[in-house]
Amino acid sequence: MNALRVPIARAALTVLALVLLLALLGGRIAPADPLAQDTAHILAGPSAEHLLGTDYLGRDVLSRLLAGTGLSVLAAVEAVALAALLGVVPGLLSVRFGPARSWLALRAVDSLMTLPFTLFAIAAVGLLGNGLHQAMLALGVLLAPLFFRVTRAAALGLDRAQYVEAAELMGASRSWILRVHIWRKVLPTVAVTTAHALATGLLTVSSLTFLGIGVQPPAPTWGGMLASDLGFLAQQPWAPVPPAVLIMLTVGALNLLADALTDSDRTGAAPAAARTRRVGGRRAAPGVPFAPGAPPAPGVSTAPDRKEQDHVPHPA
Image 1 (cartoon, rainbow, N blue to C red):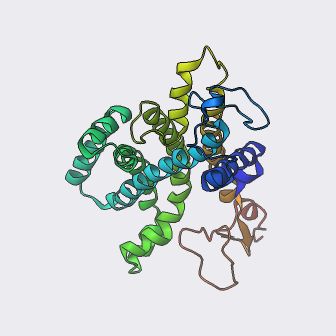
Image 2: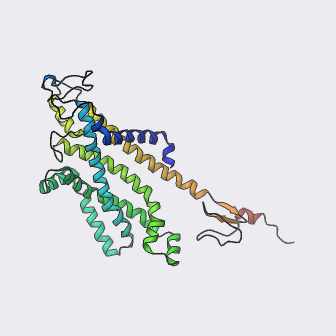
Image 3: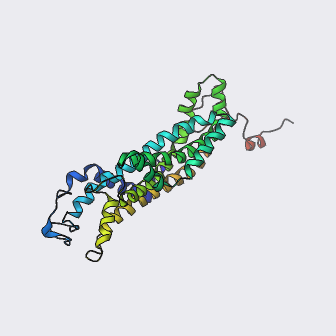
């Protein structure tokens, strides 16, 4: 992948790999029980026993930060996975909708996109109960229109390509065309959208847990730790820094990765289109082997190059 050659993309992937590792193993590598209270060391500063100090109940901040990474990150992944499932597949299938059904689908998507994430999640939690899965269900429904529109826009341009029309004329089924010709070219666009959606989902999860929605105390989350630390700024003015830094680093790395994927997709298209081989006056498609005497690929020009025509000697 061209994006891996960019130093910023590699740095972003390194940060995301570390965050994912903390999300999977944070509770196991925590130096102490994240729920254990030590009333003798309330609001204690950093020490050898508590590297990041303790909170207002004497709980180890580092342990709560590590244990809360899993809930915060995996909740955002759950919401984005649901949004991709609800948006990508209908977006691919919508390229074959008629004008009436396309208009109805787009209007429904536009209606969902006007709803604010946080307020809709609060309403869903009020109806379905205060749980993390209920909040992520609401967030996934609101992120699905983004995947639907992006996938539909990318698939519409590919659906009118000459090689797709040639495959249809040769009897290829619609599902085969979607899997082989369209989905592979839509996938980079979906990857960029997923990175941006993960950043949005993580910020929304942090906002909801900051408000006490989705996860009930004493379960640790980045947003919940940030909210509890703000009440004791006079005693520990630096306390909100660790969860805030983790949120900013993760969201920033996701946005940088999305930008790198976008740039690599744009810059990689031009060299791929320019890589043509001329054999015997014919132009071969990029990456397609050309055998003398074989029929050319669909859409490939078989006319001699203009420069070659200029150098052909005319009969006297």
